Amino acid sequence: MARGRSRRRPWTSCERSTRAIDSRRMAARRSRIAGRGSPSRRWKRSSSIPDSYYLIEIKQTDPPIVEGLLAAIEDHAALERVVIASGDLDTIVAVRAAAPEAFTSLSTPEVLDLYINVGSPEYVAPAQFVHSPWDLTSAELVAFAHELGMKVHPWTVNEEARMADLIGRGVDGIMTDDPALLETVAP
Image (cartoon, rainbow, N blue to C red; front, side):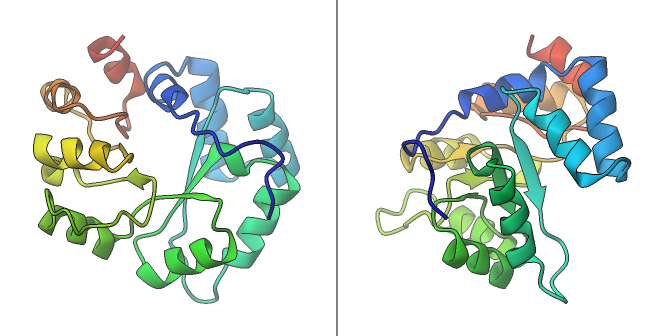
């Protein structure tokens, strides 16, 4: 898959899209998550919001869906607006092999490897994003990930004090079930 544009990383918008979701956008996202509407309608809606970025987490491993997912993303010219994640190492390795230009997140074993190797000069980041459990997202992990050029988005954070604490640690975005609360914490 070739990209038509340079390999830019426009992920400063990720923080905005994570924090500044109005009710119309949230309803549209809930609708997409619930599977309502045809895929083409869902993609059409997403392309009408040009500053939105999406995380697609592959949870299914059998049968594999990597090829079909990448084809759908390519068909809609959305590769630069999607981060692909999977907790399964084999699945995310397959994504990276099939589409090396795709933005990916660390798998569960890779997050643990990063956590164990914080500060190690030998550590090489295999992805551009860290989607870590909030309780593993220390200030040291965030700083080390930033040194490696990675963005850190802990999950799932629904408490105001925890949100404020993680923002203080320097995270780049927060995954939450309560975007309205996050908007009050990080306007």
